[in-house]
Length: 309
Ligand SMILES: NC(=O)c1ccc[n+]([C@@H]2O[C@H](COP(=O)([O-])OP(=O)(O)OC[C@H]3O[C@@H](n4cnc5c(N)ncnc54)[C@H](OP(=O)(O)O)[C@@H]3O)[C@@H](O)[C@H]2O)c1
Image 1: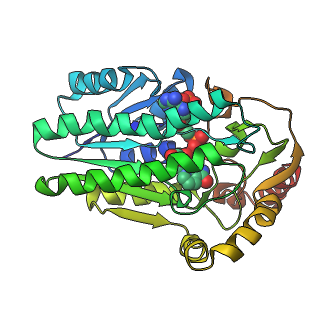
Image 2 (image 1 turned 90 degrees about the vertical axis):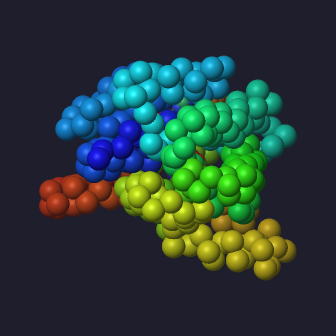
């Protein structure tokens, strides 16, 4: 039987790829994010299944309750609740405005906590259900200039483990944490920036489709924590076993691989308000296989776009 899957953060990147992947499985979808237009585009991309879109800001009080109510009104049930909504901000901790720091934490940590609270209320009443959160390898390690995001992901890691322990008496209710490494999505370009240089995903970069497959896999076979990214284990080992060396290297590596050469004026990005024009599955940091299939013109176009970033 097809499941009812709520995806919060479904209009871009990993959430949008997950919506497509669940739709391919025939699941019914409830898609949420702040901006309505990209949500309508995702609904069109998933036209083979029944889709409800609910514009939702996870930082607004009661918004997630209203989302759950809309899902139950339409489909009578919720089986899986996926939370991928997040924003990023670049800047040294003491140079990033406090209001930006607070809004990143409000979105990435408190918004995810709100999703867990609302989903568990429904799953406790129904006796079963699966919550899937997207953390990050940055929930296990740290990197400079991303303090608000890193603090949120460490908080989410702690919250996920705590809730998993509390759910041990309810084996039919599961909470999974999917922790990607570097992924080719628009989140880097959408980020607030008080550093002066545009961010980018450091290599090795994975595809959002790969993370989406891990999310769908968790819905099929729930697991406590899934790491997606070849380099995650190496970074975690370096951070844990050789913290002094890690701290010497991480700054230069971040400036070399995690920041582009493009300068940018201080701005709040999509932290306080969505930028619908920037929503897409991919961020353009990896060649798209569909472009490659178009032949040499596609390859040259992809290479040019990467050089221009
Ligand atoms: N990309 C990576 O390299 C990477 C690596 C590790 C972990 N992750 C994690 O993966 C998840 C997805 O990230 P992504 O890279 O796919 O980002 P993305 O492409 O920027 O997508 C973020 C999604 O969150 C929504 N969103 C942002 N603020 C919101 C709010 N206040 N209320 C509701 N929705 C909101 C956005 O839509 P609106 O703007 O319209 O609201 C969008 O749909 C995040 O948890 C991120 O931390 C990403």
